[in-house]
Length: 228
Image 1 (cartoon, rainbow, N blue to C red):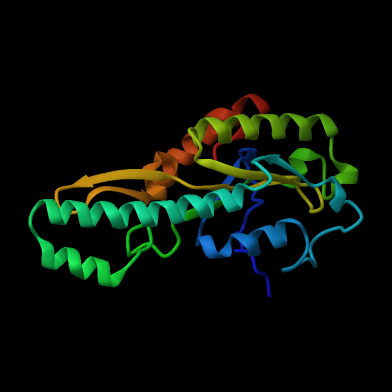
Image 2 (image 1 turned 60 degrees about the horizontal axis):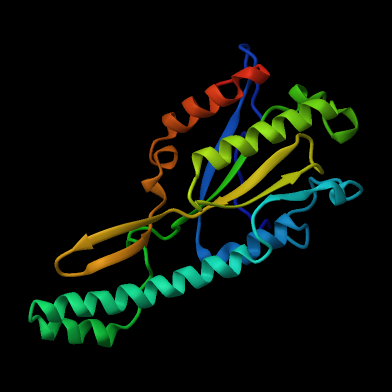
């Protein structure tokens, strides 16, 4: 059983041409290590990969310790939100409520209804656009063009530290890029003070699927790749 979320129908092709494939899946911070394990081909469903070319996979964006840094940010937000909520309640003389918050302790820095505050994404196009199934049939120039265009698009779409990691995979039928996004949002209220929250939907591409497809279509149009 795969430890990585599956993306259904990720390599479609239509009569109008080759549409860009851009998909998002929710990710919980505790699953980052499992994501990296599969990304590095150390576990998960590996039946569909060609181990002879796995060495051609590579990190395209992100610090070596990006996962530890993100976990540190989450812990810092937990502690900061906790202290700020107590301060705000005590400032309004709501000492009983402040005591309840102290008893409950630290809480996750995201809305309680959101079990997966991060986003894992994939961006690719049908294998035939590259030249066929597998790296042996790919046009190297097309792969380079796609990679450059995709990374420009991701960095422009998820600015100011939102894009945390991206890796290119060359050991499957079509070249594709997996990436991880963390979107922080500041929320201020009288009773909770300044709260720093992970909220993926604060980014318009994640908030509205159609927006993501429109912008991706515009970005890849010069390569002859159509809107998804």
